[in-house]
Length: 64
Image (cartoon, rainbow, N blue to C red):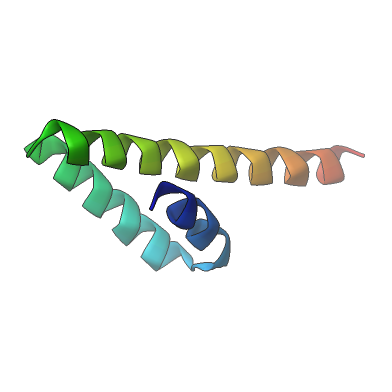
């Protein structure tokens, strides 16, 4: 699931991206059980990795 979330971020618009993050953070706050908490953290990590990587690539292109 977490890898799919990371790939989804690259193809979604800003509204879907914000909705996804709000959902993950709200579900994480509920802390239902350790398994789902771990999954939500992995999803947020994958999304963060993809976004930071994309931003770094864009900065490199802008600065060069």
